[in-house]
Image 1 (cartoon, one colour):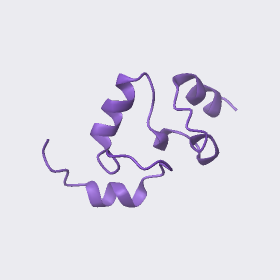
Image 2 (cartoon, helix red, strand yellow; image 1 turned 30 degrees about the horizontal axis):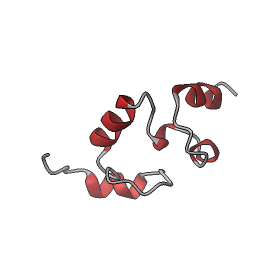
Image 3 (cartoon, one colour; image 1 turned 135 degrees about the vertical axis):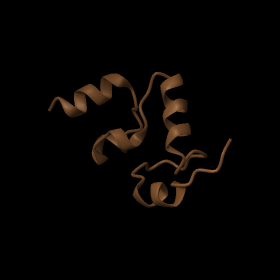
Image 4 (cartoon, one colour; image 1 turned 45 degrees about the horizontal axis):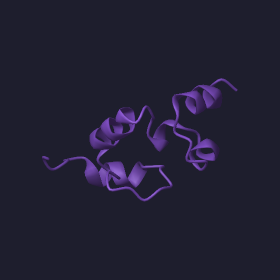
Length: 65
């Protein structure tokens, strides 16, 4: 895996509450979550992200309010 040139900037603005080996590596994080039919925590409002439900259904429900 190549070094991410934006990792420092990504970590500073990452809203994920979970500790993750991909924190700051947005491309890796996205690929990891999509392979599990999920979205990364940064796609959710803070109150929903804290539930750790990263499903597509939770995403739709959160942004349909």
